[in-house]
Image (cartoon, rainbow, N blue to C red; front, side):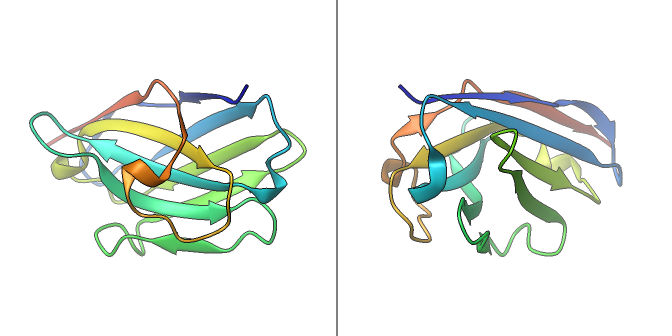
Length: 124
């Protein structure tokens, strides 16, 4: 079965950077779309970015375009989310997700597998 484990969250000051990691296991992910989402307290889960495992095509939400970058290391089965110029409104739990299909999926219900999340807190 697919397992996704996020890491790399923490406390950072406004303007700082963090790189989140997602360790994927249990499948060959060549036909998967990998997504990153976040959820702040009292808010709905928000799409951030998606990547095709094969081909490396990427798609970003307007709210993070130019600040966040998604990438992968196929040899290590790792997906990353590099986050720069962080702001207090970026404070949330960040999730990695996967779906067995290639498309630019933006809705949480489009994804079948989820990690447990990692907390990111940006102080002002």
